[in-house]
Length: 92
Image (cartoon, rainbow, N blue to C red; front, top):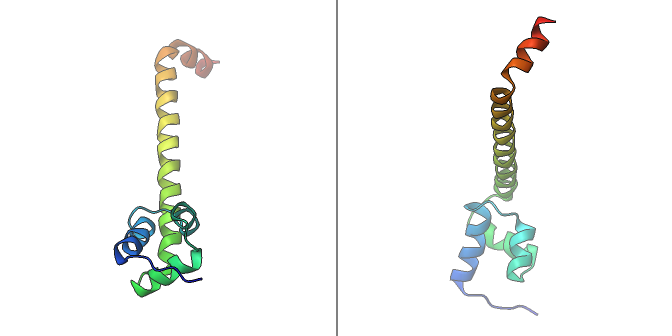
């Protein structure tokens, strides 16, 4: 059974993958459409499927950078609280 979707709906679905970096399966599930339909809409919009994979990788890498930055900041703060401890251990 083919269901008709408005062009605005299709464009927003494609935009969520391309611009916002969500994966095709996530967008498809959230919007209640098939992956195949979304890939088809992306091909009609001339969006390479590999771009969605790249967007997912970028999103994952940004999350990792954020986590590592937070860890570094915690370690910097801890080093300020225990400066004498670190000096003692380096002189041994």
